[in-house]
Length: 194
Image 1: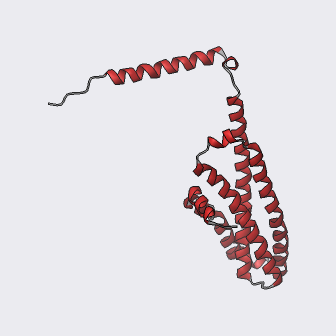
Image 2: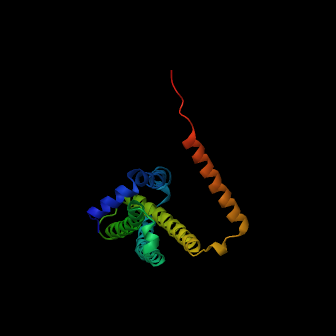
Image 3: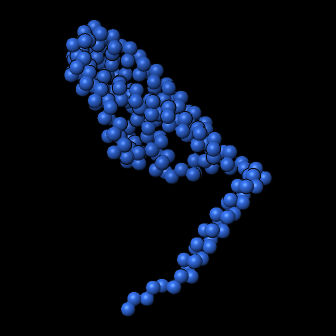
């Protein structure tokens, strides 16, 4: 359900990012309306709406499964590494995708039972394309989150014995170099102006 928290999460996600996500669905819908409208009969459109409505119902389950995976991969220490804004952005994507899937399902049911006009079909097509792209984005997000979590777990469990001697030497040299540079900057005499 859309609440005040949803709007807060949208702000953290960014209106610009949201608007960018609309570009491809708009282009695809307008192109279909402009160039392919004659290729589809009303019966073809009705069949597409029925199939897309069923698919969007399934995508609600896929989205919630993705959220369950994300939560199961998370632990308190890992989540604390996120800023609240980043975590809200992450949650917004899930919430928005479920909202899109629900909207697609509802509009598909309405199209099939109450009103079937071509302009409404293209509105439905826009929402469905947007939903598919949101799902692809969501899958990418869950995969990146899992890889980040895996890297975090690996690094957090490393001990000094796990690091090879060459890497230790390189790190020590880099630290010494940074300390020397800082010392030189602190000891530099200020330039006197006349």
